[in-house]
Image 1 (cartoon, one colour):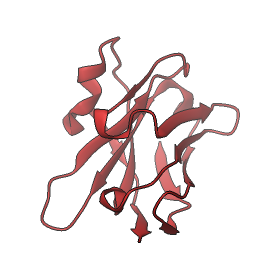
Image 2: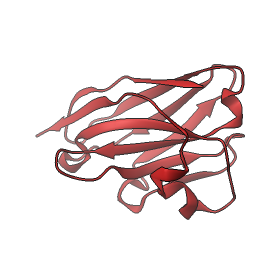
Image 3: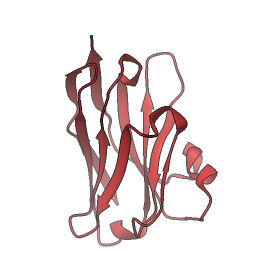
Length: 127
């Protein structure tokens, strides 16, 4: 599977943005999908994940209540809807796919469980 993230851009504080990750390949719907973000000089951090069926989602505490992850398996696309954006949400956002999945949220926080990564898309929140 290959991943391509897109939809990043510049948005003001308090605004909304939806970024997408298109997956290619016949088995794309079998993967759990995650979003990570990274700022210069910092490690990549987990943002959100969704299991293959879309029935379970996981969000890091910093974005709970503001971000929503969803997927459309018919389109092989995963979305990250970001509302009430803050300056600290500014980062390059990466999508990733994990073939092995378990029903434990903490599992998806670890970048090492992901098999495939897309290129990043820049999200910049301005005041």
